[in-house]
Length: 382
Image (tube, rainbow, N blue to C red):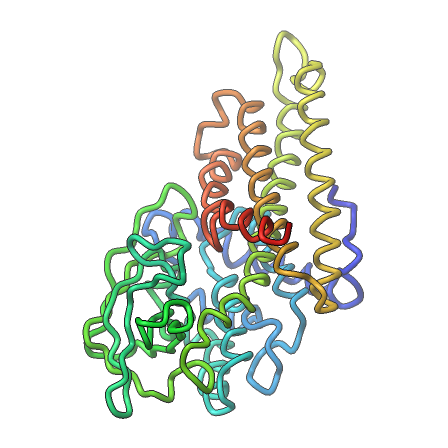
């Protein structure tokens, strides 16, 4: 599979993909174990990523970005997943937060936040999930009530990727709690020396351990009205629905990287593992099982490539993005589970890559909207 080249990875993207692989291998992978133990990435890693041009890849150069397309973000997501190196939360920082700002912020806001995000001086996060709400974004409880020239924010958020370091947080909140989804807005919070804002504990996860995930608390936090994302209140839910398909493609690409790495590692392992006097790969059960898994991974690659061609043309629907997210993450879990089984007892040892993939891949069926929500989105089009 490594010899196959996706039809959307053309021209300078081939060179870019090699530079991403080099950056991950040299800057991230050697530190992954350390970051996993402390449960957060070192702040300096963000600055290093910025120095090497690995942040805000698809944001225009006038705002400090790389001037590329979503294809650049897609390559980063795929390669990080394939390398089992998830600590640097670029999918959220570059692929999501930066694009909300690009799409909905004023020119002044874009120039205030994006250049610093591109260098790694600012780390971006988006605060959607709350205790008790999960994927139900219409019913968030965090409020941002206007008081003169400020919003006063009260509430709490949980499961926030990049939350430990975040300097700029897109807070999904209710500016008018009486209006349901039409009362949802996104307010940008700059965290430095901000009274009433505090970070809770770093949450200990079963996988993706080096990627900081935290609780956030807002107690009478005053934010200028000018930090509203978009020119008017009540557009937050619409903004979320417009941007989530791209987020779901980033997750789907991560699923693809996971399944392809798991399969390649397992084929190599079974070539060398001896069972009953011969390599495990020569046993019919092993060969048939790997044949099934390779077929699934090949279908996934074809599906994701088709989605990428569409998204780069601006033609990918939310329905198909939901299909890509749920199907790819589901099958990544299936493939990793089957590959771990073929490793035998060694597959349960953390020193083997397949064990780390087993722990990491499970959350992909939950974040970015649970797979059950994805099926509901698809079902509404029936």
